[in-house]
Image (tube, rainbow, N blue to C red; front, side, top):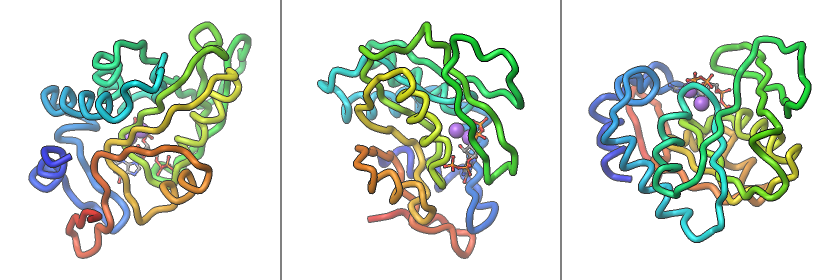
Length: 190
Ligand code: G4P
Ligand code: NA
Ligand code: NA
């Protein structure tokens, strides 16, 4: 997606060979017009698939997921993050370890909102090592729901998530694919 790549180049900051900071339009301040275009692009790529729900993770997945949900005309569920969770009744829960933050958290979705009749599009802001995506896949599986695919705003193709999810047969649509952050520079795939 050309407008997204341009935004990454003009407003993104390469923090290290592993981490791209995009607080100016995605992770802190949000560019609504760009999010609208992102939602439209996800909807174009996944329309006609019988999607009934979009599932993402708080916080940064919500903006692109809501815009995609608006375009596809389906509800958006965000898995909630807890440091620990004691009451787990009527919840699907899965643990996820963040390498960026070096913390483990518990993701939860109420069984009220997701069930076996649902066909789900997963959406997230970043795909790095794929741990967040795998936890979402686990939650959707607990509901007995099926997965139409995974929509990612920014994929860091040099990390392991993309290949691992490809190997499991998921359809992944990433709007910007980054081949490398070496030398303080963003190099896109293709
Ligand atoms: P993984 O899920 O793909 O394995 O990645 P990782 O554990 O590294 O991701 C943990 C968090 O860091 C996620 O946000 C993810 O979106 C984010 N992240 C991963 N790589 C980058 C990057 O290069 N730049 C930025 N800005 N974020 C990255 P989160 O903890 O869920 O936080 P939130 O932003 O949704 O609140
Ligand atoms: Na994030
Ligand atoms: Na995220």
